Image (tube, rainbow, N blue to C red):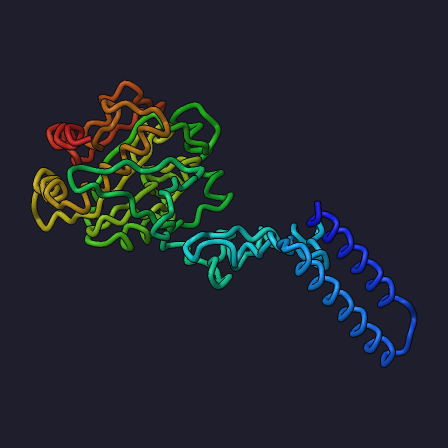
Length: 328
């Protein structure tokens, strides 16, 4: 009871002292008055404690934090709150072209290198509109594709449409891929093939000139010369439905079979060809039996030529194509 009375008196004294301190006065008088009031509070507290032997309890002059100030204290900058290895999304500029991944280093705010994942980062799958090329053979080679288009202006497209009308009864240069035809260049560079196809020289008295959609060099780099929406003159009777793939290989006075064996034994090049063919099969639903060589094109079920033309090339025999297919 005595403790309760002492605390009540102490509280009253504090209130009176604070009221006295809040009265208008000059700075000098405020300092004197404040000192006297606080001295009175101290004396009252000492007397109460001496008479009652009570503990002082909570300091009545302490001001408790408001909810607003407590909330503010708990909120910190995302950059300082995050651990140093945490990637923090930058919400102020989500489309910053200099920071395409929209991430910043939690420690410094600097852009995180896109090619180096952090130690704690989870693997992510890259999204693309194009099909992902499958691995080729035991080496797991993937397609190294470069775009090296030959000139194919509207005049050449019109020439292709005229040729298609004469030979297939289809007045269009558009390609509907259903077959893949393998060729080899008989030259030693993809640039030589590119130049031949770009020249658009008449063949057998008709335009456009010959071309192929792809050329694969010795190192296994795939060069795309023509989009797969357009026909190329590479195989009589099948140009309206066939994708043409040229593989760099010279004859050097040898037979076509010898040249095909060189390609089949050149790991980087043949693996690139296998990977490309697999991707084309997946994209266009082309069966393995419809992966053929130029040498056997005349016997394909889709062969058609209204002018009675036939192929006389010997590149990619049935035996070599069978070996190629077995690796798909």
